[in-house]
Image (cartoon, rainbow over all chains, first blue to last red):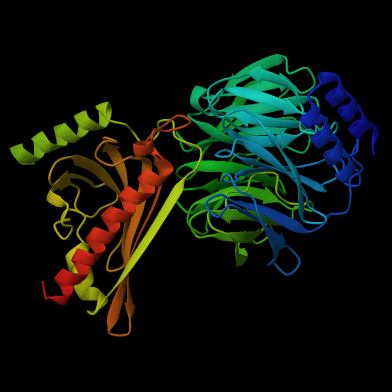
Length: 337
Length: 179
C-alpha cells in the first residue's frame, strides 16, 4: 500500500463510517499497484485512446499503433468526462446521470471502484503533480476536489454557473474552470481552491485547454462560435478566434490549436502565435472530445453522432484514419495515454 | 415581400425572442434518435416529396408550413401541428437530392419535450429503391436535474421516435401510392 493509500484509510477510520472504511481500504489495497505517484515521472506513452461512449454506457479502448478497438468496458450512468492520473495508468470517468466517478485501471482494463461527486459530474481534471481529482458539478455550480485513490471529498468551491471543462496548469498550481452559463473562466489555487481570478470569455465556454508551458488557455465558446485566448498569469483575455458552429473543445499540437466544431462537423485549425485560421478539416458528425498524442504527431477527435474516433495528421492536416467506437462518443477531457 | 409574409416573419422574430432558444441551459446527456424506412421508389421521386424545406405536408402531424428563404441556408419555417402546437425551425444545410439539416429554434416543451434539437433527413438510392434516414440530436426538455417523467430523457426520445416513425411510414405509403 502506498503512503497515500494509508493516509486515506486512516482518514476513513477517523470518520467512523464503517462502510466507507471497508470500501476505502479495499480500494486502496486493490489499487496499490496503480496508485498515482505523488510526483509524476513522465512514462512512455501507452499508445491508447480511452473513449467515453455516453449513450452506449461504455469506454472504448483504442490502440493507436494500428488504430483498432482492443477493449470495451461497460460503465453505466452515461459516461462523458475523462481524466488521467499523473502516471497515465488510472482513468477517472464521470457519469453525470449516475452522479458518480468511476476509477479505471487502464493497464489491466478493470474497473477499480466508484465515488459519488455532487449532482451532475461532467468535466474532470487531474492535478498532474499531486494527482488530486477535480470534478465540475454542472447543477450545483461547484468544483469538487477528491483524493485520488479513495475518492474522498477533500474540498469544494463554488464557481460560476454550470462549470464544464476543467484544466490544470502543468506545474499543478492552478485549476481553470470554464463556467458555461456565466461566460467566464475561473482560475483557482489548485491546492487551497481559493479564487485567484475570473476572466470574461465568449458566450457559453465549454472546453478549456492549457498550453504546455501553462501560460495560455483556450476556451471553446459554444454560444459565440469562437475560441477565447487567455493569458493565464495576467488573468486576461488576449484574443478571440472565430471558428465553426458550436465549438466543443480545443487541442494543442505543433504550435496550432485544433477546435472541434460540433454543428459544422469540422475541426478548425489555427496558429497559436498569429491566431490566423490555417485550415478547416471535415470530420464525422458532431465532433466533440479532442486531444493530441504526446509527440504531437496526431490529433484524435471523437465524433458523437458518427460513432467514430478520427485521426488527423498534424503535419498534413488530413484525416488519416477512422475507427468505429461505441454509441455517442464524447471523450470530454484528457483521454490519450 | 407580401404582407402575409411580413406578418409571418414578424411572428417568427417575436416567437424566437420569447420561446426557449437553442442556447439555453440543458441537461447533461445529449440524446440521439435514428429511424429509417425503405421505399419502393427511386430516390428522385422521394426527394421530390421531402426536398422542399418549405413544405412538410408529407408528415401527418403537420397541418401547415409557412416560411422564408426557400432552401437556402438560414431559411426558416413555422410548422403548425395538428391538433395544436407550433415549431419554428431553421435550415442549416441543404444538399439537393440528398439531405437537409435543420434545427429547432423555438418550441414549447409541452409540444415537443426537447431542447437544443438538430436533425438531418436524407435519402439514398438502393437498387431501384431508396432508403430514407431521419436522425436527430437533442437534450431533454427539462433543464435541471431529476426531471419529471414527462420531461425526462426517455420522454424526449419517445416523442422524437414517434414523430419520425409516423412521418417515415406516411412518406412510404404516400410515395408508393404514387403521391
